[in-house]
Length: 292
Image (cartoon, rainbow, N blue to C red; front, side, top):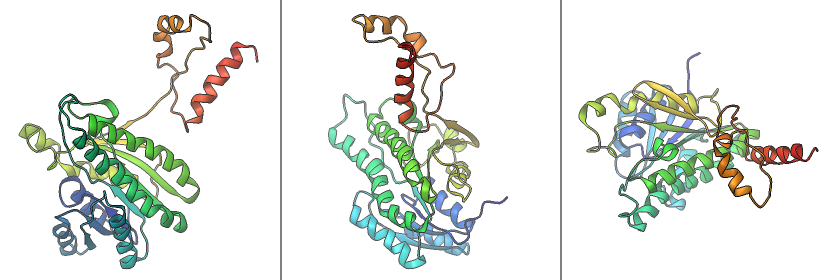
């Protein structure tokens, strides 16, 4: 069945170029009315959408300004009456090794990527709960999931978005608010000068759009981390191993060190459905060891 956004209203942040622009164009091409957010280049993307027969409006709010974000959401509601889809895409880079990084640059990246998404989610949350429908995508990154030299600020913010997604997906489930993460590998204005041209050519931003469309569709999954780049799609998972009961003896640290390979063995690992799974596993093993 074709993925169709006819009648849906979408907000895409950081959509003036690169990946965000492709997200906005992709949603509009499938029928969505799109609010295109960007500090400077939103109107050009709106013009593209309108020229292709779509419906779009521009917004220049900074996602770091909660009042401006609230006004952005109200702009979409005033124009179209609702907000169905939020794609948190706005971002910046301030790459340096941790030793050389200024704290101001660390804070700025966290403010844009993490708090920007928090502001946008908060601004649509009551509305989506009231209309009993919402689709939210957080843009995470392989740098957050696995680490990358020179990106401690970016990686910390991007993995924090996974934690935000995990909890919002649980809290939004009762009102059909589905929240997911997208980890793109794409050449954008943020990555210019960081990769050779042949790599940039393979990593076109439009190759990521199918994953975004799946994560925001009516039949979208929830609590999914979907990875995409160059036409390949993967899923990432945060897992929990079965673990080993060691107890609280005086030699527990030495016992743990000796059995660390057993503790970290991935055979039988699970993807917990909530944070409570860790405590349940630990208490269960302790009770079993005590004969309970």
